[in-house]
Length: 345
Image 1 (tube, helix red, strand yellow):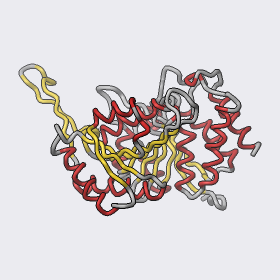
Image 2 (image 1 turned 90 degrees about the vertical axis):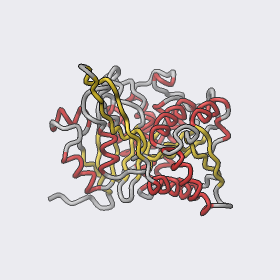
Image 3 (image 1 turned 45 degrees about the vertical axis):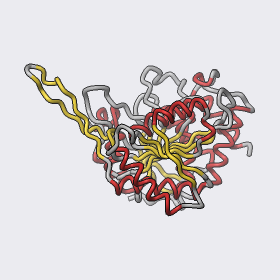
Image 4 (image 1 turned 180 degrees about the vertical axis):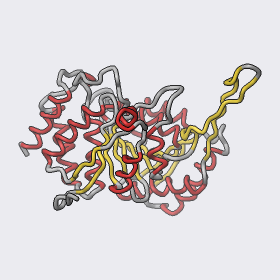
């Protein structure tokens, strides 16, 4: 059995589907230039899991994450309608990754300048867990569709406390709890009540207010600067985190992190984009920034800052951008440009 190189941190690497292998390769290249602290165990999931192991979430992948308690993941394809259940959701459930964190910052000045927001999403409950079934009527086996949403007070309080502790650690001053308690009085009313209970422990240190989800969506367009941190239920967090990404240039500019009690998985928040897979045109910034969150998680904040600085300089000083950012650079060319910036500092 091979020993782990000294000072290297074992981590699972899941290239994923579609453009996943391309953005993962670019990210590993950039991390290597930083003197990556990770030693990778490459595993598969999603369509790649089916192709390599006959399973969208193979046991060997689960065992790797269970052993390492740390993973970096490219996008995974989830079939629309029929087909297997989301491997992303299954990973969150398997490792009880209850806290999803999606920070967004303006890197390229544009329509919305000086955006600096963090969305914290409860990751295991609500409607998003997809506990669904059909009720047949007559000769139609799919006459009625039913989805069951479940929130527990303990889970709601846990994500609220996680958010308040995150705010203290990162110097955030205000948390806005997003809900639909005017209509979903029980399901999201419990979420709001639990957050208010937790907020009492942080009075004088972190402010809390709340907002109905549809009003929040509008205010994010009209005046996003009024928000500091958003705390959301599972489904609302999924939707609003994409809106936040749109404020700073799209899903290619926003990272994601999933935290449990002892395991963390970092990921690109965009999809697998099969239409551009293999064309070397994908933007790797989402996964690069996610790897920065991963570096911070393992106590390498200095490397994370060097990474973010290199990305910013590549975009704004060197004016090297991928096509989604109105540039011409390929995935590989962008990664190489970031590497040059890292090596020059």
